[in-house]
Image 1 (cartoon, rainbow, N blue to C red):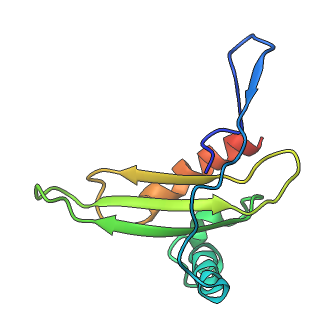
Image 2: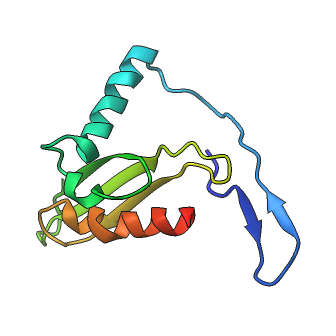
Length: 125
């Protein structure tokens, strides 16, 4: 997994390219991965998907998962969204982003609306 494809200092011409390196594989069959991918797509695309409204009109194809986690200290729950783009463009690498917001209460919209779309849109345009 690459965190960056390229790194360039502001106002500098030198650019450092990062090359992907496979360091392992998931112990899943192709069929199992396909079932997971279909489910992650459904979260953002199906009529009843928990993050569907968040991604209506977004020009970048996205798959992802919403979630809520209890705060062990007893505060409001944490909310999160993790997703990845599926644009498969030649000029931009696809990305995976996780957004975690502490103590924001129930509701995937806190993490998915605005935050994830802002990051993915900024990296694509």
